[in-house]
Length: 212
Image 1: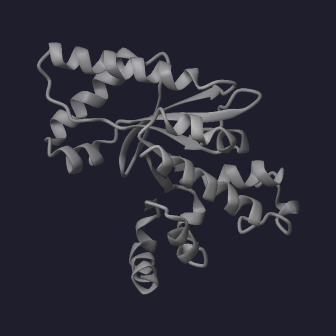
Image 2: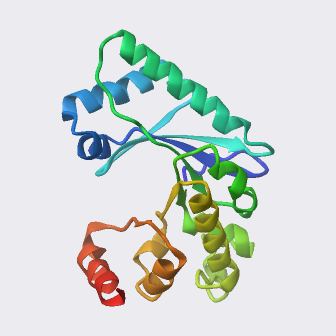
């Protein structure tokens, strides 16, 4: 989460412009992938916030979600960028449009959102604190902050189910992705992706293989 959510129900809509994934999935050169990312940033810098990391670049914007209209807005924006790239003869692949699920409100309308996007990415850190109404930055509450709480796990389960019902894939990008105590349960839920720091990769791979 970028911490800039508006008052009320907040959720980040993420347009996947990750250079690494573009190179891996579409087979394009890194130069071409970067051209697409820079084109997006140049055209929509007034609404995008850019985060640079080891895995590439992503663009986030926080919305107040009373309806799913923000998703439609991003879809329109995506089509405009594709049309412009086509006119300028810049090659590109199919960039996926996805949503970060980080609040109980987003989970409750996940069936509506899933019909409009390609994937969900569950931000378990924020989802846990908002579900349990516990500020995870407040150390005095650490004794009751429980990411294994059944309410949190059911939120994750519903999100996965809603995604799959509409042909979208679902991943976890929060700290729970590296929680080996929950790996088997996440697999049983049908999770498609667990995003973890490189240091956990081998251990997680073994855990998944042992669970099969």
